[in-house]
Length: 176
Image (cartoon, rainbow, N blue to C red):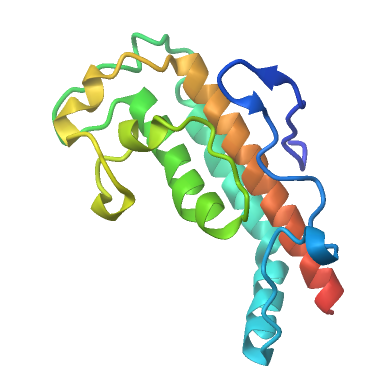
């Protein structure tokens, strides 16, 4: 499996330029993360950086496995909801992607641009503090976006997480 997930910088009619994180990571005013120079925080950052490669590998493996589970399913196969407490496959793929976008990228990466402004409402059915959400029993009623759109969303977010991990590793090297 390749180490990087990359996106071409093509224009998309709904999203403008697809480039969630600028390629420059840590260079003076172009820093993508706020660096706190208190000793404890530096120590914690070093520990995180040491685990970076393992984190990326685990992240990549889990994301690949969950995508492979729907590989032979159609959009229609992934939409139905068998019961209110069970997530449809398509919704689950989008919800786990929304989770990384909402709790990791939007919270930790300055100037991150969300893939689609409607997705937070569609794919949040648990977290009241994150805004408007749909009811759990209504997840199977969502016919759009399509499975293909959800898979594109996953590529976008996975690429942003990969870039953020790369930037974190770069910062750790500078602190050593």
